[in-house]
Length: 79
Image (cartoon, rainbow, N blue to C red; front, top):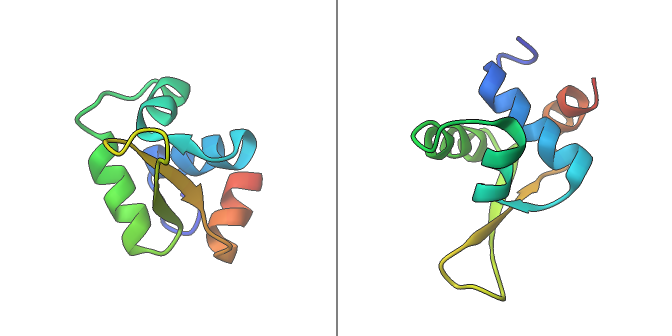
Protein backbone atom coordinates (compact mmCIF):
# COMPACT_ATOMS: atom_id res chain seq x y z
CA UNK A 1 0.00 0.00 0.00
CA UNK A 2 1.29 3.40 -0.97
CA UNK A 3 0.45 6.07 1.61
CA UNK A 4 -2.17 3.69 3.00
CA UNK A 5 -4.17 3.53 -0.24
CA UNK A 6 -6.13 0.47 -1.20
CA UNK A 7 -5.50 -1.14 -4.59
CA UNK A 8 -8.75 0.38 -5.87
CA UNK A 9 -7.81 3.87 -4.70
CA UNK A 10 -4.37 3.52 -6.25
CA UNK A 11 -5.91 2.34 -9.53
CA UNK A 12 -8.23 5.37 -9.70
CA UNK A 13 -5.36 7.79 -9.05
CA UNK A 14 -3.17 6.02 -11.59
CA UNK A 15 -5.89 6.22 -14.27
CA UNK A 16 -6.38 9.95 -13.64
CA UNK A 17 -2.64 10.59 -13.61
CA UNK A 18 -2.05 8.87 -16.96
CA UNK A 19 -5.27 9.75 -18.79
CA UNK A 20 -6.15 13.13 -17.29
CA UNK A 21 -9.58 14.13 -16.04
CA UNK A 22 -12.21 11.41 -16.54
CA UNK A 23 -15.84 10.77 -15.66
CA UNK A 24 -16.64 8.14 -13.05
CA UNK A 25 -17.78 5.79 -15.83
CA UNK A 26 -14.54 6.24 -17.74
CA UNK A 27 -12.47 5.53 -14.64
CA UNK A 28 -14.57 2.45 -13.97
CA UNK A 29 -13.88 1.18 -17.51
CA UNK A 30 -10.15 1.87 -17.23
CA UNK A 31 -9.69 0.02 -13.96
CA UNK A 32 -12.34 -2.64 -14.65
CA UNK A 33 -14.08 -2.04 -11.33
CA UNK A 34 -17.64 -2.92 -10.41
CA UNK A 35 -20.08 -0.04 -10.14
CA UNK A 36 -20.69 -0.75 -6.46
CA UNK A 37 -17.14 -0.08 -5.32
CA UNK A 38 -16.36 3.07 -7.31
CA UNK A 39 -18.50 5.54 -5.29
CA UNK A 40 -16.86 4.43 -2.03
CA UNK A 41 -13.36 4.64 -3.51
CA UNK A 42 -14.01 8.12 -4.90
CA UNK A 43 -15.59 9.36 -1.68
CA UNK A 44 -12.58 8.18 0.33
CA UNK A 45 -10.11 9.78 -2.08
CA UNK A 46 -12.07 13.04 -1.88
CA UNK A 47 -11.99 12.96 1.93
CA UNK A 48 -8.21 12.59 1.79
CA UNK A 49 -7.90 15.53 -0.59
CA UNK A 50 -6.46 13.40 -3.40
CA UNK A 51 -9.15 14.15 -5.98
CA UNK A 52 -12.06 16.49 -6.54
CA UNK A 53 -15.28 16.24 -8.52
CA UNK A 54 -15.91 18.94 -11.09
CA UNK A 55 -19.24 19.52 -12.85
CA UNK A 56 -19.41 18.26 -16.44
CA UNK A 57 -20.36 21.25 -18.59
CA UNK A 58 -21.80 18.96 -21.26
CA UNK A 59 -23.95 16.81 -18.97
CA UNK A 60 -25.16 18.04 -15.59
CA UNK A 61 -25.79 14.44 -14.43
CA UNK A 62 -22.09 13.61 -14.66
CA UNK A 63 -19.03 14.86 -12.89
CA UNK A 64 -15.40 14.89 -13.89
CA UNK A 65 -12.77 13.49 -11.54
CA UNK A 66 -9.63 15.57 -11.21
CA UNK A 67 -6.50 14.53 -9.34
CA UNK A 68 -5.33 17.25 -6.96
CA UNK A 69 -1.82 18.54 -6.43
CA UNK A 70 -1.63 16.63 -3.13
CA UNK A 71 1.89 15.14 -3.02
CA UNK A 72 0.71 11.68 -1.93
CA UNK A 73 -1.67 11.36 -4.86
CA UNK A 74 0.85 12.55 -7.42
CA UNK A 75 3.66 10.39 -6.06
CA UNK A 76 1.60 7.21 -5.79
CA UNK A 77 0.03 7.58 -9.22
CA UNK A 78 3.47 8.17 -10.73
CA UNK A 79 5.13 5.11 -9.15
